[in-house]
Image 1: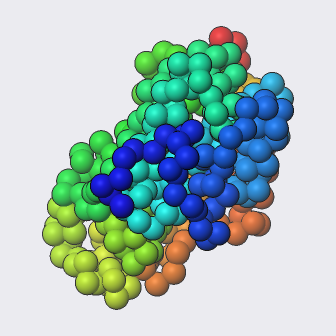
Image 2: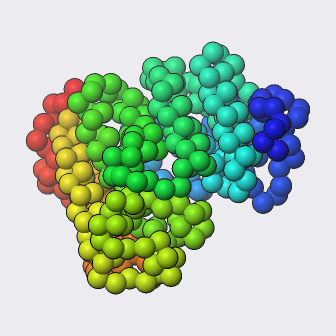
Image 3: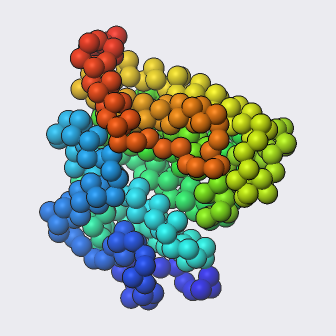
Amino acid sequence: MSTQPALSSTDPSVPPLSAAVPETVRMAWQPLTDTTAARRYTWRLAHQHYENFTVVSHLVPRDLRQDFCNIYAFCRTADDLGDEVFDQALALRYLADFRHQTLDCYAGKVHTAVFTALTDTIQRHHIPAEPFLDLIAAFEQDQRVHRYETFPQLLDYCRRSADPVGRLVLYLCGYRDAQRQTLSDQTCTALQLTNFWQDVRRDLLQRDRVYLPAESLRRFHVSLEQLRQGRCDENYRQLLRFEVERTAVRFAEGGRLLELIRPALRLPIALFSAGGLAVLEEIRRRNYDTLSARPALSRTRKLRLLIRAVAAMAFGGWRAREHVP
């Protein structure tokens, strides 16, 4: 299969897709150039596939809600092309074609629902191609790289896998400066790292991926076999404590972004950080055991986060700079 030519979004040689693949994978090649229908698809995808999206989408300004859905649909599709195909060569082939579709979109040629909907978002908000291409590169990297020797190598991966999402949100909100992008990068990297610490065993067993840096594993005398067995001992707890605390520092640094964005945008953006910090707190509450069970937030906990965030906005928690442009 890896010797077959690269796919084209209009190429009839695209192989049949099994019923087991997600709708996002099938729709990556389904021709759809009707803008209204394409927007309905991305809206439905966003609200059906991400349980928190409905809440967050109602908190962003109304004129940005469809744009958020269009961005989400791109990210979800690229992610599924990498992770839901379960054939490395085929996943790389699909991702290469999705890259071609992205470049075609910027050349004014759109064929499928995601790019039909996304093209208007790109044009209205003057979004460059780089963050979209970086995300695809990260998903390609997932197919080739399953271990990271050092923390800087892991951060370099996050630069492509997580940071582009925050930058896309900033573009939607009208911000293009380096200061806000840098702060956003801190938060997005922290969210990605939090997800890694949350899913240590699942990533290893289901996808043979280890995001804990090898240098950290050696420092705290934790082996891959221990991770596979799900054996949480004091060494593992010390390792997770170390990773959690340096992740929390990034959340603190990225939190300064809220002072630099318009008040109407602070609540939905703050909720993402609040969710990540709550997961870190849940990891601490479990005494850093993320092997025996996956730390996750209950619906009640999520509701409390929302209430606290709304209260913070209502009572001046984020009013340091009300006249931010």
